[in-house]
Length: 380
Image 1 (tube, rainbow, N blue to C red):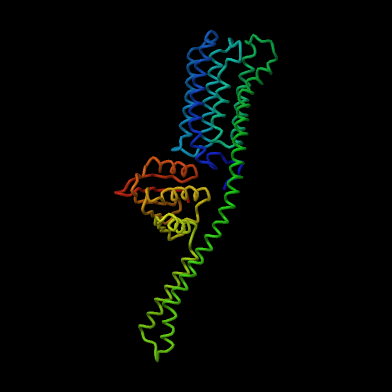
Image 2: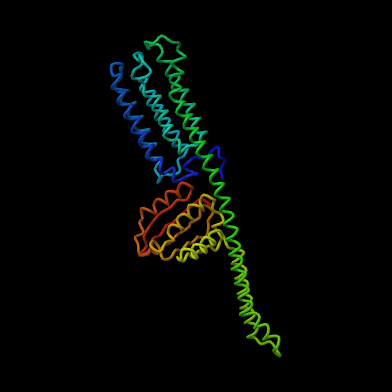
């Protein structure tokens, strides 16, 4: 797992990331509305209407890119997307400066720096605190230079450096607040996950003990029901026949299978066993290459959440999890559910797929006959 310095809320809390998407949309609408309103407010300062229109358009596009990039279907949010949003917003700030160059009497009605800062604030759940601070610092430097250029036309008698600082603060303050939010949410979420993982490990230890006991009982059952009577028969026989040799091989294979089941079981086998026992919904796992062990913790959690949700008699009467043989590039996991008496809504499953996508599992939902099929792919 990557270090916490590069982690985002979307990665550690995918559901929280999905819930934050409307806030990005609100931020995009807010910055565009602000750009239009403030342009109208200082319309008498505009000497280049084309540049003013371009400034509004660039801010609107920056907000649109931010919102589209944050949608669950496009997760995870990347540094390249953050860079594009900041570049477009800074382009809007530069275009606004050009539209009022030499006639900008007041800086408080300039929307360029505010747009950059507000978009960074809206993207806090999708970016690491380091990325937000770097973007905020670079953006503050650019708008500070624009502030120096506007100092000559300002009606306020103040040092040119104060105009630069005023513009820089409009960007850096929201960026710093966004970085603080990102860092605190990631830290608190990871701390909560550590506590819950400790409890899960205790439960897993108890589950492993139960599984080991069941495997041991299976071996004892094979011994008492098949092997011991066969040994008694051989010991009392005058000679060993070909049929006895064949029977010995069959019993050896049975014992070998019982031993292998205990040794090669993965976390998914344990999940299937416990879910079948507690929910009365049969869960079958086909994983010849033990590929389930290669999944990261957050990917396991996403698949576990889907299986546990499906394992309700009203939603599914049987679940099959099949792992294709991993290739050098990717691995494929297919979850097939046979619907139960209730409706198995595809929209509900899409939410789990969106969460899985945020942790690196590319998912697709399809209907095959009477069954619902969810296919996950991830890089090997």
